[in-house]
Amino acid sequence: MLVSAQEAYRLWAPEYDSGLNPLLALEARTLQSRLGALRGSTFLDAGAGTGRWMICARRAGARTFGIDLSAEMLAVASGSLVRGDIRRLPFMDDAVDVAVCSMTLGYVRSAEEVLAELTRVARRVIVSDLHPAAVAAGWTRSFRTHGRKYEIEQYAHSLRDLRPDWFAEEYFGEPERHIFEAASKADTFGKMTAVPAIYAAGWSRQ
Image (cartoon, rainbow, N blue to C red; front, top):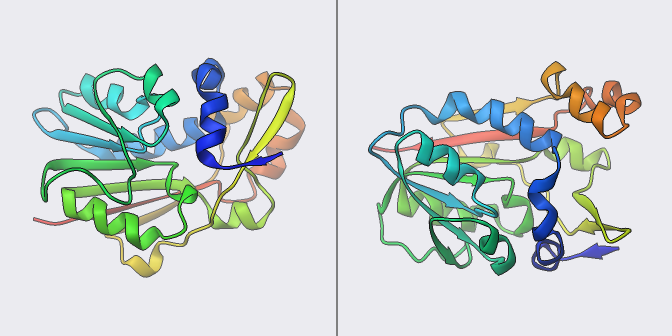
């Protein structure tokens, strides 16, 4: 059943953090090396969900803020949170040092609109999402709850035209194998490693 992102996370929120997700595991090991030192900085988690990157940034010594459109996901998170749209961020220009938009861009039609807002409010921006090649290969964003499978409406974006300072394409590897095995999907692991699973990109300005 195909549902909007807002409806999906309304349904998924109570169980979202209960299982291992290979995409999020791959993203975590990809972005950790890109975040740099965060102590003493202000950090925005744009599309915060349950606040995964806020937790990471707080542990690294940052002052954190989060925004998400899903009230149900924010109810699971903790910290300085606001319900809102990442296409119209309720923050002043240069309000934060670092903004991360994690696995969220694919839920909006216009990547340019979101990037304009992120680079307006943050001096450094990092974005990650499902790779367009994975979408073209038939990968979906989906979850199961109450015995039903839901597929989330998504859009594939290529950010190379938006001139990031760096761009990375990442594939599943041995660190994610155990997640596939735990989900009884070990037989799909080899096929899944043949396609770039996620991309990450960054912009910065003085």
